[in-house]
Amino acid sequence: MSPPARERVRHALVGAGARAEMFVRALALDHADTAELVAFADVNQRRMEAHNRWLAELGRPPVPTYAAGDFTAMLAKERVDVVLVTSVDATHDEYVTAALRAGCDVVVEKPMTVDADRCRRILDAVAATGRRVTVAFNYRYNPLHEQVRRLLADGAVGEIGSVHFEWLLDVRHGADYFRRWHRDKSVSGGLLVHKSGHHFDLVNWWLDARPVEVHAYGRLFFYGADGRRHGYARDYDRAHGSPAADGDPFALRLADHPRLRELYLDAEAEDGYHRDRNVFAPGVTIEDDLALLARYDTGATMTYHLTAYAPWEGYRVMVNGSRGRLELEVTESDHVSPAVAGALKGAALHGDEAAVEQGAARLTLRPFWAPPVQIPVDGWTRRGHGGADARMTRVLLGGEPDPLGRAATARDGALALLTGLAANRSLETGAPVRVADLLTLP
Image: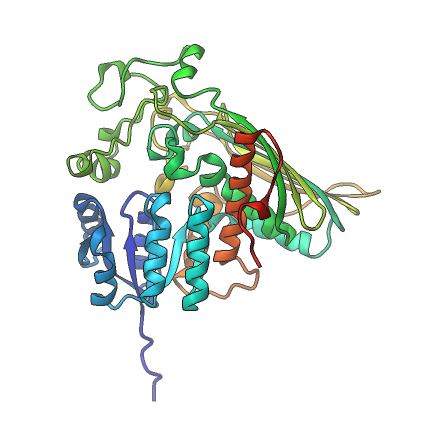
């Protein structure tokens, strides 16, 4: 007698922007035996219709669509088990807490939220309901980062004394944060929350530590209205329909990208959102050059720098310990090709147009009194965040075993967020900020 058929987990998705496509494809194609997509919710009907049309292209039926205001009713009507939250960052807490109270588990895109009050709302709802929140920190699933975790946990460098972490966003990828809603710090938290939260979570995970104190410096140096002094600015507000944007390497041409055209250009009439703002237009309230020093409860320190206007994209991580040093160097693209400078690099299309731009990765262990050792890492790719997206969905949607503990909890999400929030507060005050003064965690 064969075993009974396994009932698939019912997922609904709220926030039908570009990042949603990764989850939709994974549910439709890769994990259809364990999970199913049963509904969309969004503030924009056209975006949901676009995703339903793409589902049809994959040979899957459309799913019901709901206005964002009907989110709670959707959860009950569609008997939702798990909610995928991929909406604007400042709205995450609204959907996460409503889903928890309705008896659902949640997978939420990073950052978990954008400020301490919203973070406390989520943590309180987790405690009150006993439901699970998982933060989609896909960088944990990068094969390179998994290997770093194993090496440090196995004592490859001994007791960890310090970390140096430098991240470079090139002038294609970095510019994109200054075209879209992320340019408004009130809804994104700035790059220290939205982007660097990835990196802060990695360090917390690698060191098995929590941040204690942060001192930061930062400014808007390259982009924004003041960035016009560098000589790259053209006179337009948004690229579409603007002759001044022709040939501008900083302009995103939505009409040239069929999926972006459907998601944003064709949907503008419903909500007025422009995805292709001039990166040198007024209204940018986030920084593009950021440095900080963090201290952890283990005694280790981290120096960190994020540059959002680099000529190449990649990162360097150096971990210093009592038995040696571990060095990770990743080049995601060694330059920005003029042929694709104004194209999109990020979200679901990250790296897909970078064929002419070379990349490489190297992980080196440097023990005391011995030659350096090159650590082989299988599975790394320049696409899908180093191969991490597919590996993450296998765990979060497909039920793959997770012995490394890559699935980040709400507490993990809070710890990564608090590093960025403390850094933002330090930018305002010019002084070090104790993380416990923002939010106390057990």
